[in-house]
Length: 155
Image (tube, rainbow, N blue to C red; front, side, top):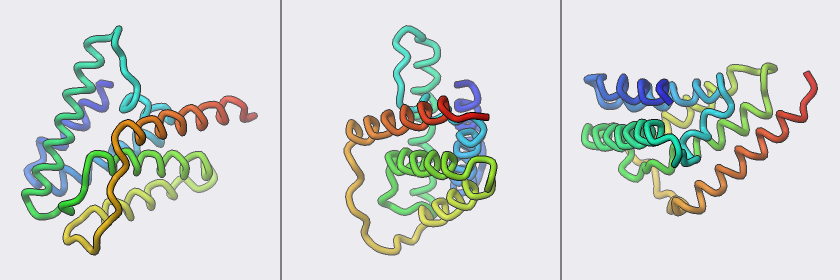
């Protein structure tokens, strides 16, 4: 949780809103590649761990600020939402699961493609994002599925 909060603080400290935003996305996806359970901290509640829940909420609000700053600078697509990060993390989890150590740069390439697609100008309309509840339930299921399949793998 501390690494997540630090990544948010570092991104907010960058004087260039786009560099801060893009670096944040890249950092989170690298953290996910290093720890496949990382994305779970974004979707799981920690009601008994008040300090952890507070840090997660602060980091999320920092991410919303990153979105606002990047939008205000004109570098981020106007239709980007925080749910788009969740979609990217789900896609990245699938790539990481499928490629593993066999093609470690695959995840970084996906992330680079996605970061570029988030950049303004808008290239065309997108379908509406899924609602929060449906998206987080899907991510929870995907995380459970990935964690279950990795538990059964032989090393």
